[in-house]
Amino acid sequence: MVITPQQIIQAINQSEFTLHYQPISNLANGEITGLEALVRWHSPLHGKVDPADLIEIIESSATLIARFHRWLLIKCFRQMVEWQKQGICYRIFLNFSVRYLERPDCFDLVRSLLEQYQINPNSLGIEVTESQPILDLAAIQFSLNQFEQLGMEIALDDFCTANCALAYLTDLPHNTIKIDRKFIQALTAANAEYRYRNTIIVESLIEMAFKLGKKVIAEGVESHKQLEAVTFLGCDAYQGYLICPPLPVEVLTEILLKDRNYHAKSDFFLTNLPAIAV
Image (cartoon, rainbow, N blue to C red; front, side):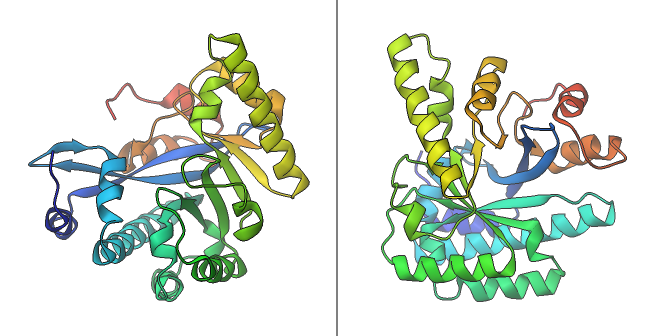
């Protein structure tokens, strides 16, 4: 499959991209505390495109990075406005490439769109994705500091994988770390030695984060045994297919509207999750 930058621009212009949303659940009380927005592309030419492949191409071009993130913000903010009209109010987390955070116009655009759509900055979270190494640390620090001052939550995504190093704990402003699904899956691995080593790693990451005053979210929880493990180790919250896969807007909205208090619990979510292909 060969996807060109021009095809991605065309997909943006023709509204081929969509956003699915995956709930994040508090481990202490089971309440849904936020939603992560995840891009999906069903191309007429290529079919379903792997999001990782899509992001890799986007990050290869400064023009694509700017166009994509602008689309992402507008698409998400419009949905947040619609949800707020229905009384559905959750913090939405958006994945920002380090390449976009390095741009000098990053903060100004986000602030401008927040004002345009009258979105409270407290209802937005930024997940720093590390598919590329940081080239301009000072620029990213500036952007994240400005977002944090507005009241946004900053999360380091896929922590301690790829280019996300331990140094980010001191180099980058943030409130939360998200432990990658690779480590979470390993907590219940069949190989006892492999399971033990990963448990020590996850336990150490959580202890370190707490000592630094950070929250911890476990990603990729897919079984009750993994849920028990991350609960025992002390994570604050989790997300993954155990509670819910990323859902299209219309499906997620229908579920959330069934809970008139808009404080959906994870068990309520599971009970009302339709048997659909996502």
